[in-house]
Length: 250
Length: 132
Image (cartoon, rainbow over all chains, first blue to last red; front, side, top):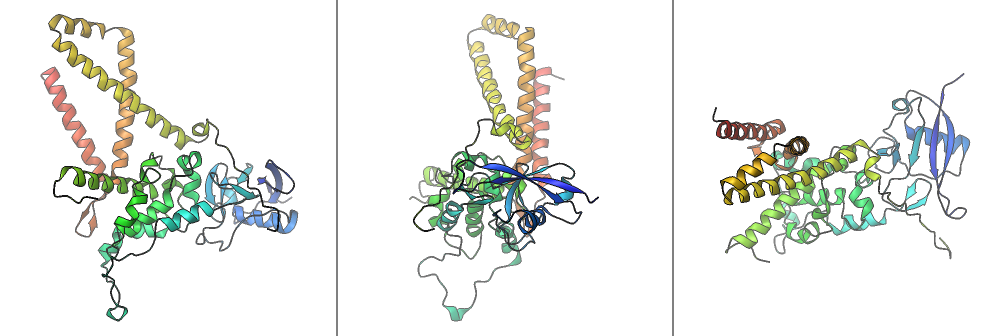
């Protein structure tokens, strides 16, 4: 008889229940299957009513993030064999409101992502005309921020962050890391306009350096480091402003 | 969505969230160690204050510190302060990202510098106290 394993899946169907429940499904165990394969099997063969997000199935799109046994993971990158023969518990990413089953509402993250201005900003009058070509950058300058640019917006870091779960006003790991990515880009001049948000209470100072955002990041972005480094540079700013008479004043 | 607005479900965070996973638990321990660090700072201030009160007050205070309860408290504090120091030293390379030209200075070297500094200061203190 073929081997099987159990998946305990979070269910929430707002039109029929006010509280979420868990539903257990028995799925075939295959060495080469990831959790997403098992969820797809449930959807196709067992229960078509299950709702969840997925797309690329190769760890690039960032849409299949779920809690697997309480740890945020991309379901396309979590192999069944790493859990077999134990049961796997699948839930929507924590810290976000649940819309239906494994689908959560990501509006808050999208708003924060926009607010952080994750794009190159040039000071007024310093934008190069198009016919002058690109802003050049050396490999060394690229190396300073490249790691922070690998983010796929999968939101696993938000789900790992207890600060965000307890207080969703926190700007959060991915958005701050992206802000830092542009702040450290030699072509960018927008640090001052991002700083108001980054250095606010809802920004870096809310972070207590739990460090789990970096531990769960599937792309090794290390948002925890980005936030702590932003704290250092904001502190340096403050000292310059307060202690040096000729320092930059607001 | 039509006329009826979909209602989202907000999951509450239990107060025991930090007991659910080991990394969170270790984080809370790290936060807790700060209390012991602060407590020992206060203790040192009291020690200095006693010193200003004359030789007798100081020696009485030091003698009281030799009670088993006090020694046990000191050992517990030592364990927490060590945990505090080690966890934070290990995190420094994340924050101190330094470059020599195009090369990033290895993380081990940065954390290592703190450990060497710690060792040097400890030897200095031991030399001052024990006069070896």
